[in-house]
Structures are given as structure tokens and as C-alpha cells.
Length: 496
Image (tube, rainbow, N blue to C red; front, side, top):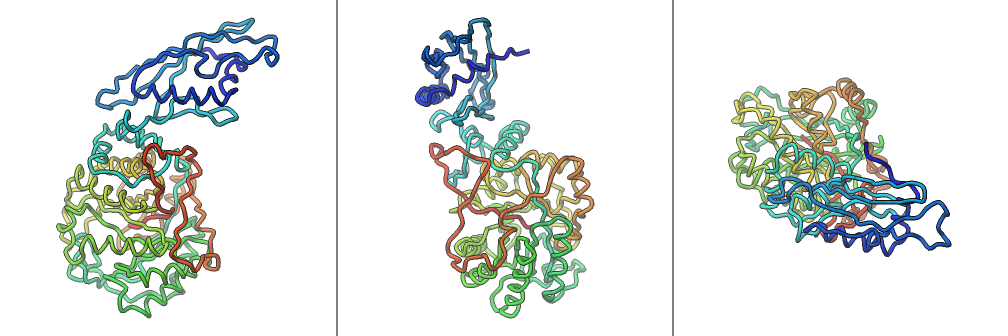
């Protein structure tokens, strides 16, 4: 059992700001070589005699610091043992504590760190920098993301969960409900999609739903705990659909009036259409990249990768939250194509506020039917990498969750996922129901995530659609400018 130091002695650690700053510098030096310092160097100098209580004196003793694990190859994050030898008038006490760079400790009224600070870039690996990040960065290279992706899975998942707790409330999971407001008849050739008209999937095409039926469904979703309502229409683009756009605008306004976030996925979108949706109060627009640029042409040929990126740019420029992710299990090579997908999204001018992770649901009649199911470890690795690379983004387990046992879903949450789709259906595939998810939340101590945007109604949405709100991360307090970080996008939910 580790002995505790006298509280009066420990309180001296934060008694002097200048010495605390010197302590910070010394910790920083530790990041690349073991050092040996004295108590005087880290702010444990005894206070002046006139301020000292008669019963307490502190002797200046050496502080021994050494790395217990080699940093060679950066396969382990180093632990450091810090020994403080403190002596009072009546008691001698030696304190041994273990600190880890994954979980920097903070304390004292000044909010000064009492554990190791994030490592400086020239001394730390990319993986360690990602672990220590306190804000998003958009300067990633593919090689850096590959280094993170290839970490041992247990280490990777733990590190991602640690970063997740810095940026998000770990027990909060956003509930989102998705409604298909226009089914089938799509001219695209997405090889996984039941709604493509060229595939014989037995799906009957429908016209756009009427406004009231959509709002009725949204109210049911809200009553069951969902705070985001997403509406999907199966068509290539919005061009030439003025009447349909007018009805969708009314749907958005109605959903926002319920106090819910509103998200739509309508295919390709131009700048003018994006501005109209912003003025209606749209919270987020979903447009998935699906996979990496390199693998994309093996999945879709009727729309280019750059077409999708242009839509994301139009949405972002209009001030609408960007929701974009991918589908796992499309015959891709995870080690390169999952990295490529994350790389593309993580190097946009701002990170997508939501990253949906879909597990392919093979539909009979589509070219992707018969694909081998994606493995759990591949899903967890993708989620964990996305969490470390895009720490402020909401990561949603989307399509295919219904095939995952509850234990597998929990592994995804522990690795950084914090949103799900729930309700009667996804677009054309089955979905976990509200009652099932409520029971799961109760068993695991989870709670629905409430976002600030869900409290904004259309009347409160500014007409100036060009300005984008700055991300707020209440769980991150340190400036990571030294790590080359840049602020990311805004918070939203994801689509399947």
C-alpha cells in the first residue's frame, strides 16, 4: 500500500506559480531523456518561516525519475515513478506514485499539472502526440495515420478511449432516428445499395413523403429519446427538384420546432441549395465518402470522389455541419483503405462533426451481396483510429449494428464511438429498436447525449449562413498549439 504524504507538504507543490512553470519545463525535458532533479526545482521549497505552521517543515530531498518502459519503437507509453521524500516535524513519509503520459493528472487551485505534460513533437511519436492532443488538427499525413492504425489493438483502443474522455462525456451516447422520405428509384450504381433502380432487389420505389407524416414520425422519435431526426431521399442530386426541396424545407422547420436536430441526406448539393437548407435551420447534412479514393471506383462509377468532396465543401461553406463517413466491408483492404478514408476526412479544412461507421448489410440483388462480413476487430480499429485522429468528432455506429451483439457494441463505445441510430428502421435495413436500446443503456450505465444544437429552433438560426460556429470542447482545457493542432468543425450526428 502506497503511503500518503502529509497534506500540508503536498499543498506546497502549487504554492508558487514561477516554480510551477519551472517544473513544467523540467517535465518537458523528461520527454526525451531521464533527469534527476531536487525538490527545490519543482516548487516544494519550504515557505518563509513567518508563513510556516509550527508543526510542518519540509526537507529538500532528491526526486528520482526514471522510465520503466523503453520508448524504443514507441510501442509502449512510458511510465514514470516520482519519489518525493517529505519530512515533517513529527512524521517522515516517502511517497511513490506512478504517472502515465496517457492520463496527465491535474490538481491544485491554480489548475497546474502535477503529472507529465504532453510530449513535444520533436521528442514524441505521432501516436503519443495523438494521445496528448487537446484540440483537433487537420495536418495529418497518411503515414502518420497508418502509424496510429497499426498500433496493437488493445493499446489503440485504450488510448482512443482515454482521448474520448478528454473531449466527450464517456457515458453519453447520442440517439438518432433515420427515416426514408423517398424510397428507391435512384439512378446511381452504388454496388451496396438496395435503392439503385438498376438492381433487382424487390424494393418498390415511392414518391416523396408528405410533410405531416414525416413530422409525426419525428415526434415519435423524440418521445422515445432521440434528439436528432435524419431524413434520407434516394436520388442522385437536388437539381430540378424545387417542389421537393420546398417540402423538405418545411420538414426541417417542423423537426427543429420540436426541439430536435435535423439532418438530411439528399445526394449532391450545390451552394445555393445548401444556403436554402441552412436558412431553414438544418443542423447537419450527410454525404458519405463510403471508402478511400483508391477503392472508390470499385464501388461506384456514376459519381466521382471529387463530386462528393464538392458537396461537402458546399455544405461546410453554408455553415451546415458536415456528416461524412464510410461503409466497412466493401471488399477493401482495411490497412490502406480505412486509413485513406480517415485521412481524406481528417485533412479537410475542418473535421466532419460526425463520422458514421457503417457495417455492410449485404442486400440480395446488389453486387456486394455475398461479401465476407467485416470482422469486429476491424470495426474497433477503425473507430479507435478515427477517435485519435478526429478527437472532437461524434462517431456513430450506423448500419449493421443490429447484427452486433451487445458486447461488441460496448467495445466500440469504449474505443470512442458515442452515437447510434435507433428506431423502427434505417433506410431499407433493420434497426435496433428504442426499447432494446433503452434496456442496453440501463445495463451499462449509458445516457442519451443532448447537444446544444437540439435546443435551437429555426427562429434562433441566424440568416447569415456563411459564418460557421466554433467548436467547443468542454472536456479539453489545455492549448495544444505546440502540437500543431487546428480547430475542427462543429458537432453533429451521423447517417447510415
